[in-house]
Image 1 (cartoon, rainbow, N blue to C red):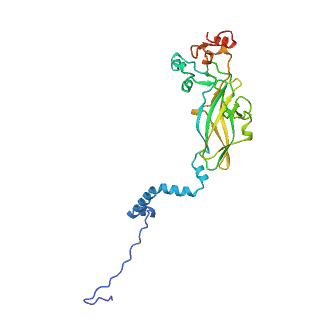
Image 2 (cartoon, rainbow, N blue to C red):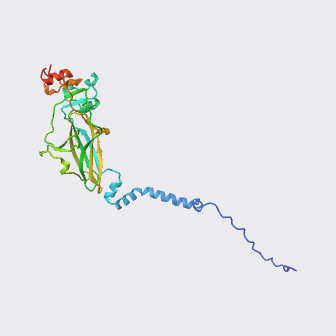
Image 3 (cartoon, helix red, strand yellow):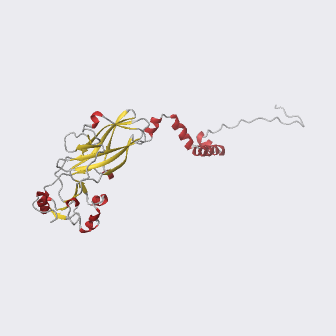
Length: 301
C-alpha cells in the first residue's frame, strides 16, 4: 500500500531529466561572427591597419638592408634617362621623298632641316649615326658597366635609295666619344677624341655609376656601305651579380645608318649651303648630282 501524504503536507518535488541537447551544425567561427562584439573589434582593427599602413611600411622597410629594398623596388640597376640624336651629320637619306607640302614646312634659308622635319620624312643618317645616351645608376652600391656593343637586329642590307640632303659637316670636336663600325664582325666600342689615342675601351676600362650619378655616353656608329639597324647591348655588375640590358632609339625603334649610293641613283639631292649657291639647299636630280660630284658641271647650275 502506498503511503499517502499527511493532511497539510506538500507532495515532494521530483526532478525530471532534460532531453539530450541536439548538437549544432553551425561552425563555431560563423556563430562567433554573429556576435556584435566580434564585428566591432574587426572594424576597429581594419581602421587601425589602414591608418598606420604607411608607418608600418616604413618600419618594415627600415629593417631590410638598403640593397635588398632597392632590389625589391623592381627598378633596374641602370636606367636610360635620356637619349637623343646629335643632328651633326654631313648628309641624311630620306626614305620618304618630300612632297611640295613637306618642302614648304622647311625654311631652307634658316639652315639644315630640324629634327622633327627629318623624323617625318623617315630620315636615316648617311655613313655615320651619332647618338648621345645618358645612363644613371639606381643602387646605393656602385653599378659597373663592363661592356657596351652594337647588336644587329638583322643582317645589313644594300644601301637605301631615294632623296638625299647634304648638311654642313660639324665634325666631332675633341669631346670623348665611342666609335664603332656596326657592320664588322664582333664590333667593339673604340675611343674617339678626348685627347687620347684610340683604343678598345671596355677591354681596358669600365664605366662606374654611383647612385643618382648621370654619365653621358656619345656613340658614333658607322657603316662601310650597307643599311644597318641595331640595338646597344649593355653588360653590368649590380646586386652582386651580372646583368644585361638593351638600349634602343626612342619609341623602341632600332638605331639605323645607311651607306652611299652611286650619285646618279638618288631621286633628288638638296645641296649643302657650303656650296655657296644663291639658293639655299638647291634641289637637283640624281643625274645632275653625279655631274656635280664628278666636277663636269658647276654646283650652282
